[in-house]
Every structure is written in C-alpha cells, then in structure tokens.
Length: 189
Ligand SMILES: [Zn+2]
Image (cartoon, rainbow, N blue to C red; front, side):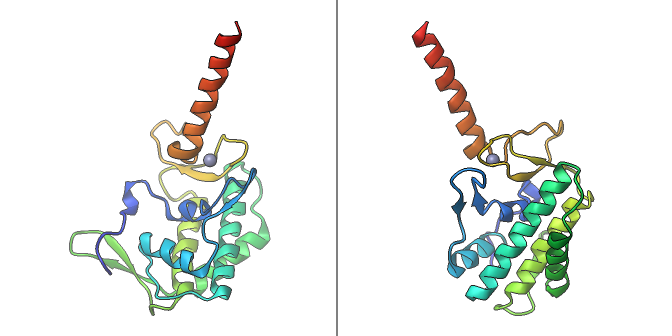
C-alpha cells in the first residue's frame, strides 16, 4: 500500500466521509462521485486503492452510500433502522474480503483481495458504518444543523455538541449568514 494516505485516527470517519460524497441533500444536491473514475479517486485518498471501477460497481457503491445515510440518520434520531438499508449494508459487509494489515509504524492499512475488487473496498466502508451505528466507537451520530444539508456525521468532540458536518462548508456558511443578517440589521437601524 503506497504511503501518504490520511490516517483515520485523526477524526476522519470513513463511513460518514463516504456519505458526504453526496452533499446538500436537502438543497441543490452535489454529486461528488459522478463517474466510476471519481469513485476510484475517492477510494484511493481514503486508503482503499482499486485499479478500476465499472458503472455497475459505482451504482452499488451509491446504493451502499444511501443505505448508510438512511441507517445513520435513523440512528442519530433514535428511529428504527430501515430494514432495506440494513440489508444492503450487511450484504456489502459480507461480500468484502479485505484484510486489516498492521504496518511497521503501527498504522492499520487495508489489503484488498485483488486490485479490481471494489466490493472489498465497499465491505470496509460497510463494516465501518456498522461499528458507528452499533455504537461501538467513541463518538455520537448527529445530523448537520444546516437545513439544506442534514448530513449524518460522527461527533467525536469531547462535549458532543458539534453542529455541522464540516466547519469548512456548512459551519462557515452558517457563520457568514449570521454575519450578513446582523450587518443588515445594523445598516437598517
Ligand atoms: Zn452539513
């Protein structure tokens, strides 16, 4: 596995990063993996390098993504988990055959059974989603406070009071909106 992949222990949660590849779900949705190659690129920077991806594999990946989103949203709001979504997550987890590899420097890497095996990569993502939804990891599932986003994210802050899926996007936009609103009030008074 080549060096230079981000370290997931630094708060980058694989499953919710993956659901974040469709952003602004409740506004003008932005698809960040519109082509198989874009999924290959995303998997590479997330430590799951594959050589190629077919349109069918991309479709399966998106199905997994939406299933994780649905199940994580239900978990965050303490609703019953949607059965169809749970089935897709479990199927993907069962079909993946990636192995956890301990690197000499102490990091965990994923070794896929073959470089073309997108299913292995999806299995890793599905297992990550299961560990979060099952409440096994230190953190809390929550929904982004932005009304056009409502992304499920994993809050690992000490106080568990994070409001936005991402400070650089939703958090910043909210701050700007608040600033503009107060500015308007000042100039009108
Ligand atoms: Zn958001």
